[in-house]
Image 1: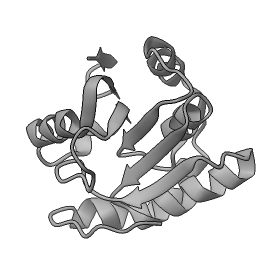
Image 2: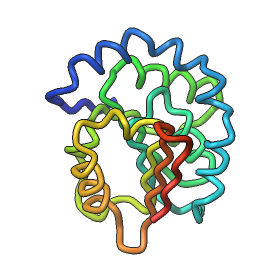
Image 3: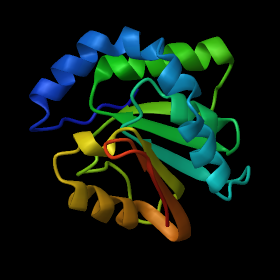
Image 4: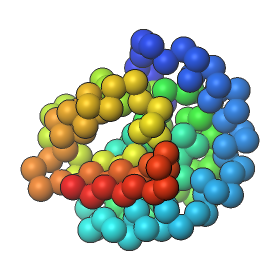
Length: 159
C-alpha cells in the first residue's frame, strides 16, 4: 500500500478508521443500484487505467477492476484501505492498488487515468473544486469522470 500524508482530515480519518469493518459489510454500499448505474454509464474497456477517489472499502474500485486493466483505490483512511484489500482477496480481484491520499492533492502525474470515479464520497471532501481540478489534471485527454453522491437524492455526473 502506498501512503501519502494528508492535512485537515483528522476527524474524518478517525471516524472512518473506527468504522471501516462496518462499511465493508454494508449491503447498501456493496449492492445499491447507484453502483450499477454508475458503472454502466461509463464507456469502459479492458485496457483502461482507473482511479476511485474516496474509495472507502473499495466497492466501486472493485467493480471497476473487474472491467478495466488496473484501478487505484484512494482514500484518506488506512483501515478503509485495509478492508479494500480484504475484499479484493475475498473476491479474487488482483488488479486493484489501495493508496492513501486526499481528493485535493492526488499523488499522481498529469494525464495518468482513463477513468476517475467517486461514489458516495464527494460530500466529505474539504475542497470540492480542488477535487475537480485534481481530477482533470490527472485525467487523460478524452478520459471520463463519473461522480455519484447521495446528499441530495442521487447525482451521477459523467464528463
